[in-house]
Length: 138
Image (cartoon, rainbow, N blue to C red; front, side, top):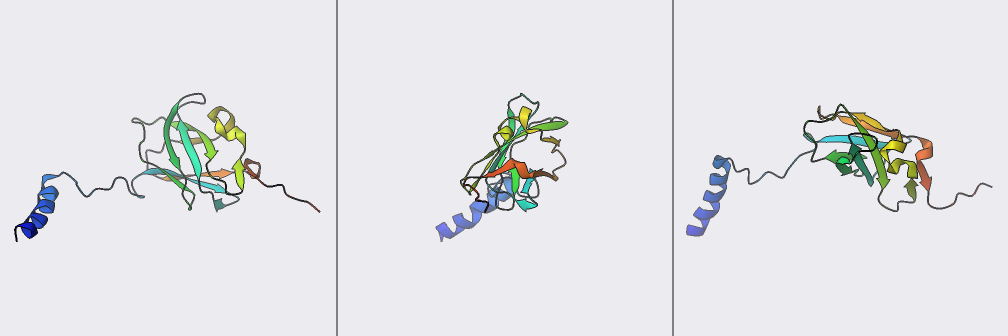
């Protein structure tokens, strides 16, 4: 009986004390993100890095999931008005990103501040993705 009382009492104490013991971190609705697409299809396993300038350090980073969405759990505060973006492909899905996307100074990708929490699109051009296997043209 003592064990049952303890099991019921501890969650109640945590709930009323404000400890937030059951919080699992940011959810899809409250973390900033970007939607990475290629030819209008979501692109997974892309490491998205946000920089404050074309040559600056990484301020935030996330990896796109199967729906193409990369969610950033930790954002700088205050956020810059715009981000310079660098990308890197992480898995062997039969494709690789062009090397120019490795540096924010070369990628040409910029995003406005993610402070609003809206998911911003990154639509990659046809030249951004290269197959790992040769394509035979007969």
